[in-house]
Image (tube, rainbow, N blue to C red; front, side, top):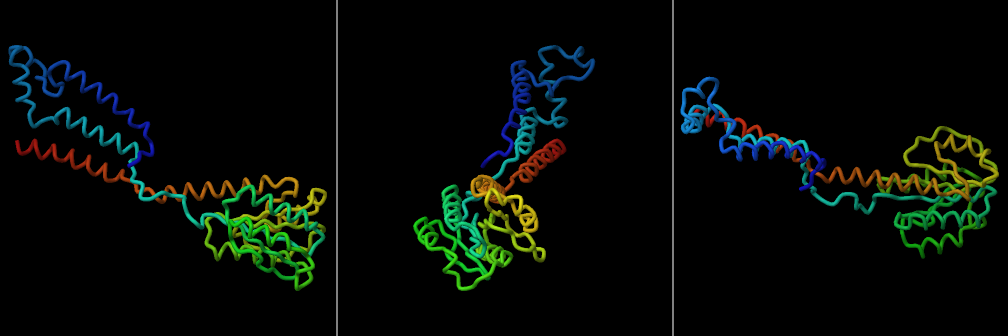
Length: 285
């Protein structure tokens, strides 16, 4: 069992101090004679008479301490961790989409792909290439040898179709993430040259990043806004990696919360039953 707000247990200190004080006095503060009755009973008998007079009228101090403890534990939010959260095979995925229909430098694209993979090596990564159409090259994997092997042979002259259809490439890449059912996904489009004409609106399902040359950044700003994508350059890939890392952390936190069963209602129910039991005891006496 875990406590979501463990500092709330400090509220037990006043109750413990009160019980200690009453115990040291040798008589319970809940069993005193009221008003002028203190004058009529000899001091030797006051404790006995007071306990007899208050029996069935007030809960015992230890019962009140137990109730206070239960309420403090409820404030601390006890929970039972059902399973270890955040350890999912499909928690994250990234697709590197390489635009081979434009004027981007293929060597810069390969280097950027390797940089992204090295930054988050544990994230499954797929490679998609496109020109007039989009094609899968590598499925989602963390096998560096497999990724590097196919990155080294990617080139514009291997494409079966000419042209440039960036929306098709983006949609194809996002389809890889959707079919994988990942919780945190990112599509990184490695492109360059002159941006193509903008088409119809593309609904955003996954995080998007457009990577282009530094001297073409201003030209690609409007196109990145059309794709609702973050715009970075080949020399500044850090923000793309940080964005995906934040998504993964958020997905893990959500998974951790989903794996915890809150016990607070049960603790509150137990405290209510204990309080009601005191009324039953007093009535029977």
